[in-house]
Image 1 (cartoon, rainbow, N blue to C red):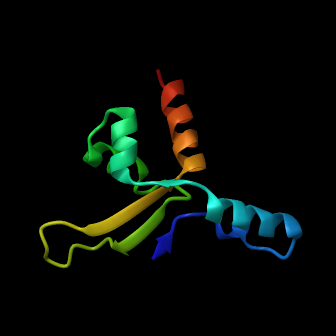
Image 2 (cartoon, rainbow, N blue to C red):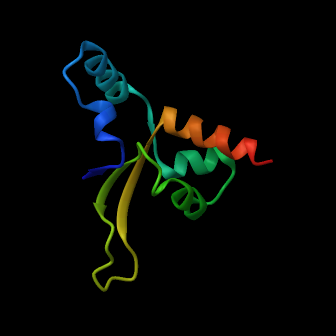
Length: 92
C-alpha cells in the first residue's frame, strides 16, 4: 500500500501530529465510484483527477506487468476531495 502524503506533515513526536494522524485515520474516505456519482463524472475521470493527488490512499500495484489494465484501488479522504473540488471550482 502506498499513501501519497507528505510524511513530514504526519510524522513527528508532538501531540498535535498524533491528533492529526487520528483525525486523518477516522476521516471519511470515498471510493472513486462515490466521488464519480457525487460529481456526475466517469470513474476514469475521477481516477485521473485523484491518482497522483497528495493524501490519497493507493492500494495495489500501479504497474501493469503486461496486463491490459492496472489493478489499483484509490481511497480519497474527505479533506482531499474538498481541496480538489475547491481547486476545480476556482478554475471556472
